[in-house]
Each structure stands twice: as C-alpha cells, then as structure tokens.
Length: 414
Ligand SMILES: C[S@@+](CC[C@H](N)C(=O)[O-])C[C@H]1O[C@@H](n2cnc3c(N)ncnc32)[C@H](O)[C@@H]1O
Ligand code: SF4
Image (cartoon, rainbow, N blue to C red; front, top):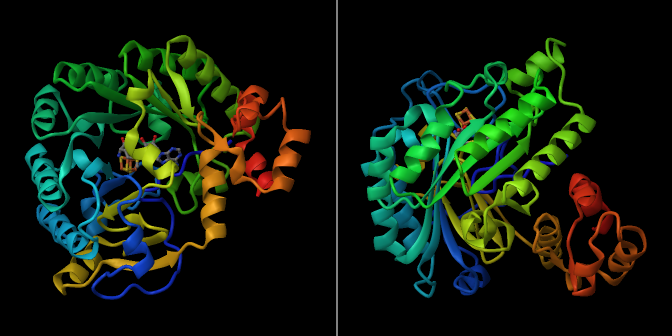
C-alpha cells in the first residue's frame, strides 16, 4: 500500500540539491514559465502542542523549540517570505487559486493571524474571488466560536485530523483528542458556514481490528463531511512508533491487512456517496475535491511558505531550511530561506507526471508513456490493473486492484 505524499511540506529529511542565490531569484526559463499553470500558496505552521508518536512532519513542540523561535512572531515571519515571493515571481501570473495552511497545527495561530496572512497574500498576488482556502485543524484546538472566526477570516475549507474513533487506537497514535470530538468539530464547521469539510483517517494502526476501522468510517460518515482522506499508517524512521516496532513492543501493519482495510474504506465510502478521486482521497462530487492538492498532482505551480516548505515553479523545485530559528535568521538577513533546489529535466517531469497522474481517478493520458511502456500496460495490466474502457478513450485509470498495487504499476511503467 502507498500513502499520498503531502507535497507542500514533505515529511522526512531534506534532499540535497544545487544552491539558491541569496535573493531567491529563479532561473530565467522558470520565471518565464510562471503564469502558464495554476498557482497556489502553501503556508506551513511548524508548531504542535505535543508530538504524535507516528509523525515525522517538520513540526516542533515548545520544548523542542527550546525558546529558539517564537510562535507569536511567526505570522510576521511568513509575511517576510511573501514579500520575497512577490519580488522573485514575475507580475505576469494570474491571481492565487488556492491557499493551504498545513502543519504542524495551523489552528494554534489565532484566526485573525490566519486572516492577516491571507490579506498579505491577497495584497501581494491577488486572491481569486472563489479561491479555495483550506486549514488543517486539530480537533482539540477548535470549537464553534473559533471555526466561526476562521470562516470570517476568509478560510473556506477545513480538514480535521480524526485518524480513528477507537480510544485504544488513538492512544497508540498518541492523539490528544477524545473519540467523538472530530465529528462534533465537523458539525460545528457546517454550522459556522463551511461548505467544504474533510476528515483525515489512518488505518492499520497496531491493535486496530477490521471492526474498529468500520466503526471509524461509520462515525466519520455520520458527521457528513464532503471529503475524507484515508492513509495507511507509515512507520516513519526516527519516530517513537518506529522505536517501539524495532524493540518488538508492537507489530508494524501487515500489507495484507492494509489492503483489506483499503477495500473496506472504498466500499463504505462509495456506498455513502463519496467517490475516490485520488488513491487516498474520496469526495462527494468534483466541487468537493481538494483543489490545492489537485494542483500538486497535476503539475501546477506553488510557493511553500515556512520552514521546510517545498515550492515548485516552472519546473524548478526548492525547499526551505527546516528549523524555525534558521528560517527566521535567513529572512532577518534579507536572504531567501531556501536550503537548495533542483531544476527538473524533461525526463524528471515526465516521470513525475506518471507517478502522480496514475494515482488519480481522471487518470494519466496514454501519450505520457513511451510506446514500449504503453504496449506493456496493454498486454499485461488490462483488465486486472488498468481499466479497459478508459484506456480506449486514451487514459490510464487504475482498477481497485491496480490502486492496491499502484507503486508496482508505476515501477513497471517507468
Ligand atoms: C501533517 S498532518 C497535520 C494535521 C494535524 N496536525 C493533525 O494531525 O490533525 C496531516 C495528516 O497526515 C496524516 N499522517 C501524518 N503522519 C502519518 C503517518 N506516519 N502515516 C499515515 N498518515 C500520516 C494524518 O492523517 C494527518 O491528519
Ligand atoms: S498533531 Fe499532526 S502534525 Fe502535530 S505531531 Fe500530530 S500528526 Fe504531526
């Protein structure tokens, strides 16, 4: 099983790459290409009250920060990077179509601070009148009043980290919220006027049974979100969860169990009217899809603000220094906070198109494959792994069996 990588701020350590000039300027070809693809902004908020044992996102508790960077000063820092982005990107681009506040725990910032950052993005680039503005919210950090203030601040979509409704599963994951709280939050979000509400679930946690998973899906659906993400638990190196697995205290999720849980999810979510549109994501209709994530998966441009955030513009990808103190120091010196970058070759871009496109219900255009790979797909993957009727219409779309084996299919086609 595979999990969607969250591209705005990928977990794990930073790759190496070529240096970025201090003023952050782009190679000319990339600057010229800006404006040809839809543009979004990701804002990373690298703070959490406590760290969940499975998580290796770039986030820090107050103890981990050790007084080295201030959460209160963070919104002003992000504005410094928005100013830099405005200086670096040509004026030719369209207004921003999507903004995504991810974390970490963005809801540790006050809604008015989120509103200030949004206004800054609007002043710098213009925000489309119907822009999608998503915030990730931890259920224990919001209530009806906070959600109303977030809606008033211009946020249009909220995504709650539910993970499970089984108390013993939440305990293994070190989650802070009580069972039932995320569903309550989703109802509050509707009441506060959010049209788009999503819940994140994790399956395959040690100790979880098929029935626990069915109950979690039922409970999530009872709150009537228009979007659900369901990820197989990944045991990430360097996490407390990985240490427990290594010591034999708990057993890592088994691939067959994960495959069964995926099929349970797909059955229950489809029956309830949520259709898959990316391997780990289900939405009520096309309007309910996360437009920001679609931009990542379809070759769009985005600027990632914040420590460890990744950006992509016109075939150049770069990533910021990870620690909030190093990030603050770079901006204070008037320098780009980018750690390094890579210029994608045509081959890199084609590989990426295949890897991401094959995961989408809309599929991958057959012309993205070499003639040999397409021939191989036709001979040995249809009809078990690739949908024959979509292929006749010129697109490669995975069957459910294909979705379970997406990584192997990608390896075979590239
Ligand atoms: C970066 S987290 C931020 C959301 C928020 N802080 C929260 O946890 O509620 C986004 C989502 O990634 C998923 N996630 C994080 N680490 C994961 C892991 N090791 N395996 C599977 N899913 C993971 C969780 O479902 C989580 O809700
Ligand atoms: S609250 Fe979210 S971002 Fe923070 S440690 Fe837990 S999973 Fe990671």
